[in-house]
Amino acid sequence: MQKLFKMTIEVDYRFPPDVNAEKQAKVIAIGQTVGTWDARFAHREASLTSHLGEVVSVVKQPDNYSIATVRFPLSNVENDVSSLLTMIFGKYSMAGAAKVVALRLPENYGLRPKYGISGIRELLNVRTRPLIMAIFKPALGLSAADHAAILKEVAMEGLDIIKDDEILGNLPSAPTLERLKACREVLDTVKQQTGRTVLYAVNVTGNAAQLLQRARDLVSNGANALLLNVFSYGFSVLEALAVDPEVNVPIFTHPAGAGALSAAPDYGFDYSVSLGTLMAYAGADAVLYPAHYGNLPFDANTEAQIRDILRARNVMPVPSAGIHPGVVGKAVSDYGQDVILNAGTGIMDHPDGAGSGVKAFFEALECVNKSESLNFDSLDSLPDGALKSAIQKWGVWIDK
Image 1 (tube, one colour):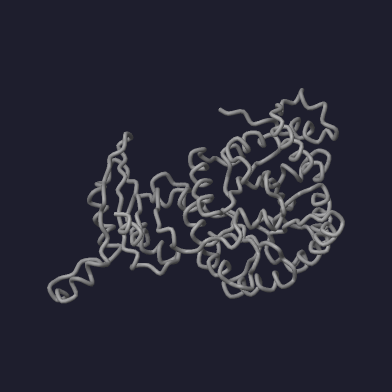
Image 2 (spheres, rainbow, N blue to C red):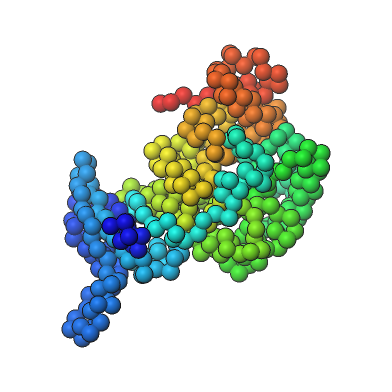
């Protein structure tokens, strides 16, 4: 059985109560693989059968939904995500209510990260604590010089990573290469003065050919990380970046657009598949996704699934969207040390400035490490007051 699984792909499809799950699972197993054949192809029976999908099980759930598991031959795909998606859900995705809720691939399928958790930590020389990441805000309308000034403020306070907003492309107001060159000077200064490396994940955009060449150009001009909107540009673009020898920097992936694929309860792909499995097998080094204690609706169990799927492939989890210093205790409880805490307004909109936003995160980590409360009234002893100001503004996450 173990040998069989290594040569196959298993997919769990969830069907609503009013759908004949057993019938539809058979439709998928046949229709998404070989299809039907008649006596004209009897001489090809063995070959055709070797490509046929198989219904493994159909199990009714307590809510009267059904989970059908279909097994596909590994020989039907090209060891990439695009052919995989076409096989497991391509045409059938238009057939009615059905959702892919789990995807099990052989360990050697697809790609592993070039850097991942261990490599990013190696680049930063930070081994034993959560990493702190910021987002340039405002998202649009800043000049390259503005970006550099913001970076200087937060980098000098100990920030590990900063990224472009996913909306920011190669725009006339601040062309990507100009932003990079302005920020590269800051990164070099920080390195010279403190010995610390700070990563800047530059948003790489353009059509497929432009994007790949732009990524190479950015790296050759000093980019030490890239950001990719995978659901906009495609998993094949991520895979191409991940295997390109000239793109020898970590790739951070953004979830923009994932809701169109995963948010509907009875259609598409579960978030654990779209933001977990597919990213983990397509070469991402770090994956951004919503935290359930952030400002987007997200399920805690789904978040935990994504975290565990990514870590199993050495991919760094990056809970995002509404992260601020008051959730650090909860995040460390959920994630431990191997996590990037990604904050936009939670750093940039700190009452005392973005530098204090970074200080507040490190003060929160210090409190958590000492098992001290983040309660507002207990923070007077902290020297900078940055955490107290942050909690006064954003509060503290309390489990609900």
